[in-house]
Image (cartoon, rainbow, N blue to C red; front, side, top):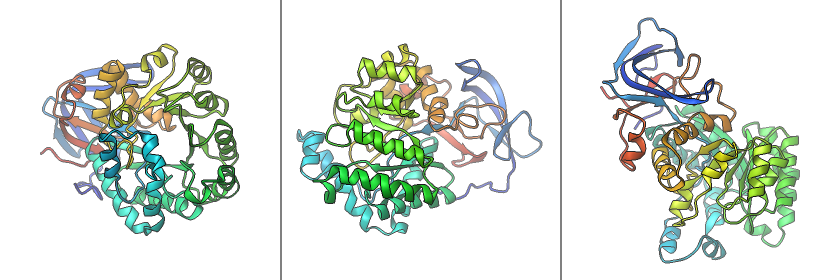
Length: 409
């Protein structure tokens, strides 16, 4: 699929007619709502009450929804890690693979040695696939360079791809993804490097919006993570963190203490962590694809989080090692089947609340007058058909900024 420019770049108006069901989360009512047998007007990339002239698309009675917002991905890497997948199939755990030189650190050499343009080509192809699968906005992290030059290069790659690709990319600095080989015996030294040199340079570069930390046993402690995130805040970066993925480390409580917009993963989150998140309005970004891909059975406690009034977001966690999944529709299926969420809950989590986790909910993640025209025209009739199809992807067309990417005509 060629996404560089839409086939109707010069077209300012677009009218979607014969929509069977138009389904969106309505932030005013706090509910998922459906309008039947309706139409939708688009002008200059935004949804309007009525457009004049322009192209007309007959949706043929299909379902129309907002495009997905994927709020947790790791797309800046050179090559995949298929050999680790084979090792897991043979019984190796995530920790055992990391101890043998695999895991996050195994992607460092590729990113450090790759030219910026070479990385950009790989990232563009990944963004092509995201868009084809219905994701119209994606959060994207650095984190496979783990030195100043490579982290800045990774963020620059995201910036340049964002400038030329139809998809919207929200960059996150994740220098605290793991301890690189040169700091394996000096963890605090690497934390100092992040705080004293990396974060100031990232802020000066002006690309990253968020700062993330992998707070987990064997990676960054609560104390180290807190130091990094407080430093990030001082430099204008919004904190978020990988929290309590494999065991309860107190990371969810830290997310609340530092005012993080989100705590992500949470498969091992404690009751105390959930309470602190609820008290401080920390969004829970759940990544069931990672649990599935790693062959585990302990999914994040979605029902308990919802019962405590916490907003849940679903994301893919697309990365070269622990979750090579880009399909938000498949993540929706997993959340319904494995975490007991209702279709309306998962839909809101993959659209509106996902945009909220990126501070973008005012203009995307829902269908309303004034919102960006980021839409999916489905080859199905109703919302429940999305998780029901599981791996079949019944998409007729993706519309990004009011422009059809894949035409159904």
